[in-house]
Amino acid sequence: MDDNQQVYHIPALLQECMTGLDIKPGGTYVDVTFGGGGHSRELLSRLGPAGRLYGMDQDMDAYGNRIADSRFTFVHGNFAFLKNFLRYYGVDSVDGILADLGVSFHHFDDKDRGFSFRFDGRLDMRMNRDAAHDAAWVVANYDEQRLASVLYLYGELRQSRRMASAIVKARASQPIATTEQLAALLKPYLKPGAEKKELAQVFQALRIEVNHEIDALKRLLEQSLDVLKPGGRLVVITYHSLEDRLVKNYMRAGNIEGKVDKDFYGRVSTPWQLVNNKVIVPGAQEVERNPRSRSAKLRIACKKAAAGN
Image (tube, rainbow, N blue to C red):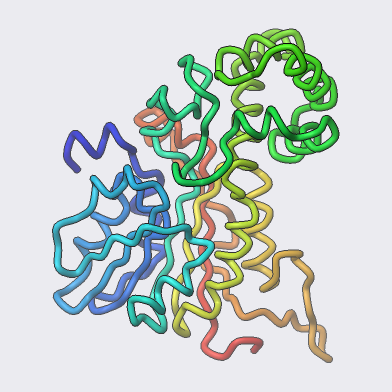
């Protein structure tokens, strides 16, 4: 990996993902979160001349990291529409899908994108800069109850109601348009000694809402069964409990709700075979090298040869 890629993003659980994909040299794969291209480059190095790799990203900044290789195709789009994009490129099915749901370092470190409270900049947080509404719009237009729900569900913040109330009162006299304004406003509601952690949870919650991340993940998971060949692998890295619960439920039960269906004999009926029964997390050496990987959780499932059996 070159220096530019390391600045943009360091891929988490790289070797574990490659092992989980069980890469076939002549197979077809999709990295639905291309970003800096770290996972894609490693995957491509394991493909033969007949192999194909599609790298998807809704942020055109990632286009600058595209790989100059005839086996690689950059797809500008949201993975919520995976099936449609593959059909556009004439692909009916693939051997593996890789999704690293973490935010690239590039986004956190670019003050103009508004993903981090470390810099003062506009409350943006859009992965797709062409999207209609940014975080400033959410803060300005959601009512108190809806704001509180976003902060509680996506940020797991105990003070979500008080925070939402403070936002609504403050915006009545002055727009809250920057990261610094929001951080200063919410400071009184942050737990002493955990200010940075809770502010990160606030920004996480707004980012998830702005980018409709949970809905997109649900759609990706539901489409994966249609897109994967029998024996194909679904490899997903999550970074917070809500995402991980969705992936865990889907891989174990074959549905987003995690509702387990059993046959007459009490056997669980699911189209997936778990590759790792226990979630995979980074080791101490990786966390030391890449502290931002510490919350990563990897789950892998294989599509059964005959769905439902």
